[in-house]
Length: 293
Ligand code: SAM
Image (cartoon, rainbow, N blue to C red):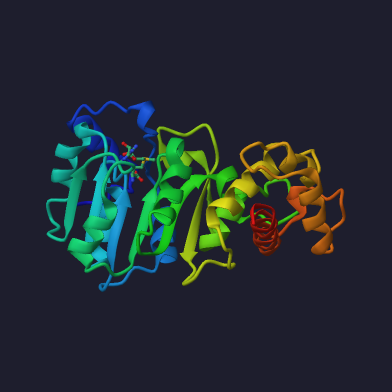
C-alpha cells in the first residue's frame, strides 16, 4: 500500500470511499511524510512495543506504526472510516481496529489482555476537542503508559510545557508535569493537514515518570488547590484559596501555610512550582487534621 502521507494517495482514498469529513470528530488528516517521520522518531517505537493509536483516521500513521511496532491497537470513533481502514491496513496482521469512543473504552483491559499489563506507548494525531480528557484519562486511570507522543493544538503543547511565572503556566502544566516530562518535538503548520485546521499544531512527547514528580499526601486535594489557585489568576493565592468553598480553607490558614513556607503573603498561584503546591497541600492537610482533631 502506497504511503497515505503523500497527499495524492490520501485524496484518492477519500474519493474512492466518498468520505465526508466530520467536523465534530476533529478530523484533520496528516498529509506530510516528514511530519509523520518526526512523530515516529520522537515516539521511539521498537519491535517489542505495543502501541495504542487514538483516532487513526484513514490509517496514515497506523501504517508507520504497524511497520515499526510489535502490535498496534487503533481506536476510531467514526464508523465510516472502518471500511477504509480495512482497506488501507489490509497488508498488516499486527493491527486491530476498534470502532469505539476512546473516552469510553476499557483501556486497562486491553493492555492486560494484549500486553500482559506491561507499559504501552501511545501515539496519535489527537482530535483537538478532547485533548485534555484523553491525556488526563491516560494518566489518572493508572493505565501503564511509558510515553505519549501526540499532535495537539500548539497553544495546548505550550501550556503543557510551561513553567512558573509564564503566561501559559496553569493547572494543565502542573497536572501533566506531575505525571510526565513534556517535550515539544515539532511545530506543525496547518498546510500539513487535510482539511487545514484553523490553529497551529505541535507534536509533544510526554515521558511518564516512574513515580509522580512530587510526593503529596492527598493528590486530589492538591489538584483542587491548583484548580482554585488558577481560577482567578489576578487574585493573590490567599484570596483564591479562601474564596473556594470546596476547599474549606480560611484566610488565616492559607496565610499561615504560606508564611511557614517562607512565601510572601501577596504571592499569586502562578508563581508556585509543583513542589511548592505539593508542600502547600500537605501543610493545609495538617491544618485540617489539627482543626478536626
Ligand atoms: N490519525 C489520523 C491522521 O493523522 O491523519 C487522523 C487524525 S484526526 C486529527 C483525529 C481522529 O480521531 C479522527 O479520525 C476522528 O474521527 C477520531 N476521533 C475523534 N474523536 C474520537 C474519539 N472520541 N474516540 C476515538 N477516535 C476519535
